[in-house]
Image 1: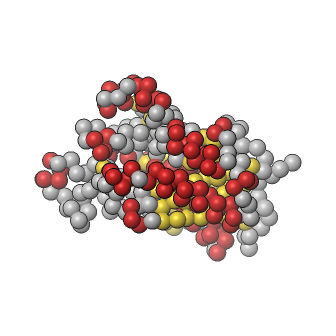
Image 2: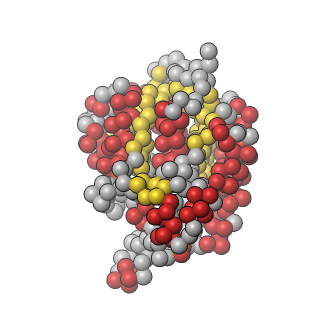
Image 3: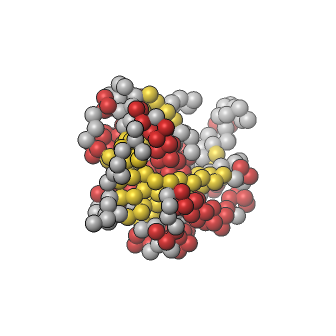
Length: 340
């Protein structure tokens, strides 16, 4: 019976098409230096017109399975944690991804945690595998194509121009002994006062689809409550730190034990503020200035990149930490390798 949960392999995927900072500057009416400096974005990747969330997730899933050395037919569950803007509305991506990959034994599970999907998926998969080890191994995979939800002529949609497209996945399994890469403790915090701050306003039961909603461009991602969102900056910093502290405590650690941080793409100043609050040098983190924000994909994509670039040392305690609109703040600790 498994008493630990291992990460057997990870994988990331970025679409071929790339949008440069200079192209973005022209679209949003800003200086290129503002986009690269203040917003920390040198460019981002955009999915092709016929490249959908299930396609992106399938590509990342293939890479994660290959890295793990696991046959798709051995996967017991495919857990999707990416964007809720998928191939179709009111539709699950996980069954399609499982079918694409040939995970014929797997059941499908979907998590809806927007931008904090990565650490939440690690928590859910770990707890599920500890409770029911006969399920494993499982594939956690997420994708985002929310660049298609931005309306550059709308001030409060244009605000989200840093959103890019991409996918990431990981294969997890229950094991009896401490593994090379282990998922440790997690912590989550939610404050529903901010639930209505950002959304696609039309298309649900509150504002059904109509000619008027289409003409008014109400089917794009918008900040509906700018004054509330503006006050979130300090709250988010404090709550991310609290989530990190909770994850560390549940791992038998403290903030001082964090060696590396994988977090969402945000402005450079906000990224540094979080690292300072955690007491971790900025050099010991991944800053996704070439991808932009890929919603829930960011943290796991950053983990995969850090591992492939050889930036993680044996025994490093790696923190996956992110916030999701709504608002939920989530963190999961991962121990990467064993100290000599």
